[in-house]
Image: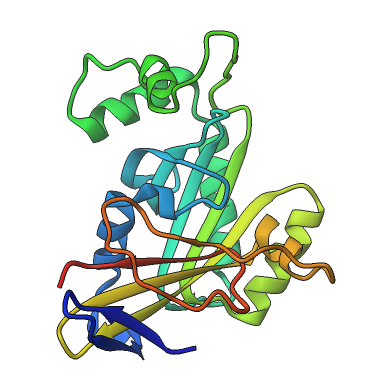
Length: 235
């Protein structure tokens, strides 16, 4: 599939696929996703509560967030291909997250937001616009999201196995494109998760292309697209 941006004059500007790791540090990807957290999880918004969080074992979690239900989401980023040990690394992070109580989560959030007066529970309800009757228990569940330019076969197979066993793990592959005019485009596919399962069903699903409100819409063909999203940088 070829991708084009359309200028105000109606001219096509083609995007070429590039190796992200060859030109960018992992920190850049982390910053992009921090500014666009809704591009991380497959099923809705994500409230980030921490970045570069140090665990009890001295390792560092790239991003930590909460989903609508209050589950803690740990995000592991790889700018290139996922090594085999990525899943073990992510499980270690989830194990740490499971031990965090409501007070520790709030302290993490206050540190991230640089505001000790914030109530995490209140902020979470407002962020997700929850109705009064919708009860939420923070950290009742933990979720894992692995984001990489290429999810390797061992990581894909292990993650699929863990999902069958009830572990909420999602693997997201991204593609990076550039145009000659200096524009950049980030595409996302769910490699392991609910969308990927539905995509393999014979009856299929209607394709969808989602663009956050802060980004320019980039016309794409809808053929063979399932759970794919694109983000374009201003040119």
